[in-house]
Length: 320
Image: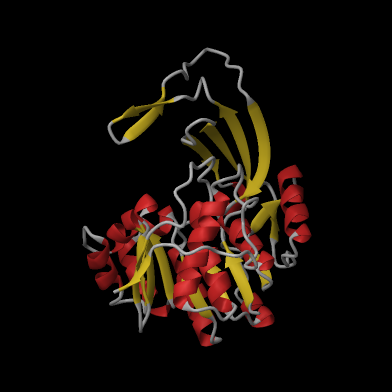
């Protein structure tokens, strides 16, 4: 098994579930919750508290898969931070490199979820995950990981450059799933890609980085920068390529999603967890799709994460 560092957000997800007041009304390709009126009080079905965030989600998947999983990130000295530590420790994630940030709260996200359709509105406060400047790059030398999985440093492109350069100087492989603030820095982002071993984005994100309207075109352009590229496209599946193979794949199962929060993290971390365990590129794509499918069947971003030991059924995947 491998030693993998995850870098990303840690947050408490507060789910507010209701099927009546949050009943989604479709308007074209969008949907709105029409019964949220200011000045009113609504009774809701359920409120539940879960831990999440891209760093926490991916670190837990790596640990469940049997890898030595280490999390780099920030929490505060509050109840949410304590809950994050408890969960991570119970999942055998190494939390010794986490920073405890003063004068801030641990990140928090309020998710208004239509419990019938799975549609949601997300209200986010990054809290302690707003600033990654206290990340100590010398910790990479102490840990000596095989892989670095980076989802976001909240748009700090200078830090990201230093992080990637340090990792490459130590022979650490990098998988990168850029967040919205990294994607907003398109030119700087492209300049970082030469250090990346695996780039994982969805179709909309890919179109932020390179020109193109279809998956094959986007893949071709991104392959000019990164050897291994994975682009997902929701219910349409996705496309992926390394130096030797190109695959077009569908979804693992067409299931009604209870909660799609964290499904992207489940796919990305599932892929690397399987690949780092010595599985093939094709098999790792299948496992990633299965992991994302399992994850959307439960409320919360970690409850449905797989371990790699589950039997998988065939799915639509074609070598091109």
